[in-house]
Length: 218
Image (tube, rainbow, N blue to C red; front, top):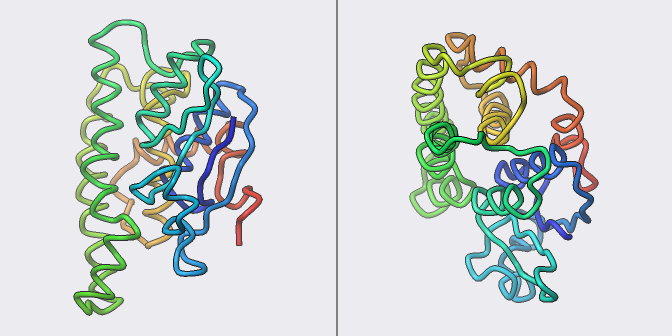
């Protein structure tokens, strides 16, 4: 099993957490998103993923090598193909609930703050760094504040996003909080999120997955 990713990519970070929570062995292949004009744009990588996005998980399935893309699809694949240490709860209603938490990050926050979006703002639209960072903080703080409200009011919230075992939603929350901290977002009014983040940061699977602990970290 190979994971093509970038140490600072939050989508790659999500998959690393999931792989670690499941105790799966994998080889990492670094794809630098900035150097050499962006290694994700090279023909060799586009052959794996025409979207030129990380991560890509390469796994042998029924005797064939498959290249899986999109972090949420990859994590759901891992949960189905390697069911030990399940990341999603057992009931359909609870699974839908946990997926909605993850999707609030993956679809409502992350796309607006993705590297290629930020590069378009600063490069093509000539937005200043100050304006670009204000854009980032606005959408990140807006999305996370809503997630804070949901988790604070939810009876299923425990030590982690769902109960007292780390799982699917936590794989998405922790990288987003890491990005928010890197861009100096105001997280002071989000005690539930920060409590969960702290619990995750003490867990070996999350520590191993952290950007600073990756072989390609700078």
